[in-house]
Image (cartoon, rainbow, N blue to C red; front, top):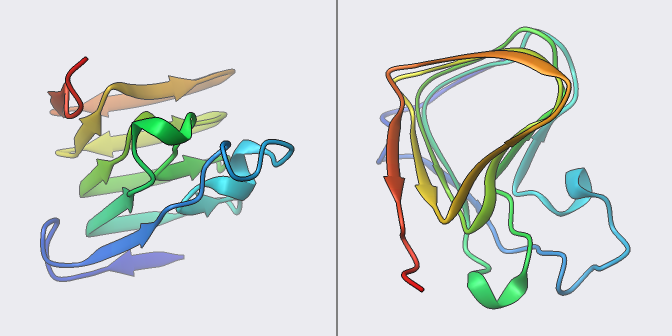
Length: 123
């Protein structure tokens, strides 16, 4: 599957789900955008979770997919903004905005030319 839009700041997929409102839900169930199928590609798009710091775990993008490629994308959230769950994933020329930015387990990922825009919510 391919999602191609008009620029990393021009097109946005937004949501506000969090562990605060759905404490028994899985991480994949409360994310703004979740990828489960292999061979996913996204380019020039922004993934945002607007729930904020008072809502605990807030995830903008979750990928449990093999051979995921994201190019010139923005991930904007609070805790675990980008959750690269498992398998092989490539993130190139992407920006991650949030406090605890990247969470991953059991995966081989390749992150290249990534912009880390930390401390969106100062303590």
